Amino acid sequence: KEIIGNRTVHQPRAIAITEIQPPFKIVDVNKAWVDLCGYSREQAVGATIKTLLHGPETNLEVAQSLVSRLVDVDTFDESEAVVVNYRSDCKKFRNHVRVGALRDEKSGNVTHLVGVFCKLRDDLNDEFYANV
Image (cartoon, rainbow, N blue to C red; front, side):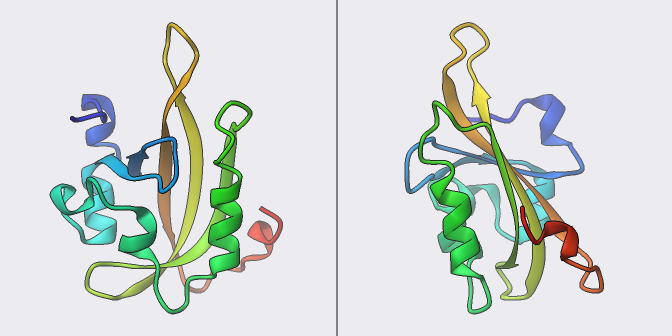
């Protein structure tokens, strides 16, 4: 089932939509995510961000901290972190990930999580993100 609508499918920012319960399986991605991460939509749907993008230099403490903030979806609003991720061709990249809740317009209940991914240049200073 396609979750990303026409407005976000061509969004220049890489977007992944996941289930709200661990292990947060991917239910949809846009073209920018496919281009950034190197996986097709078909490869991504049903997989997890962890299985696709984590690698030897991924800081598991940072990743786990981001995930632990997602578990209580009723109080969760937004979270972000900078992590090292890996494309399908095993090339690593620094990634600023911001995760938020998608809510049903009528009920206000959280239906999915949305992750926005932004590749960072390697020469940027991480001080801004140190306490994110």
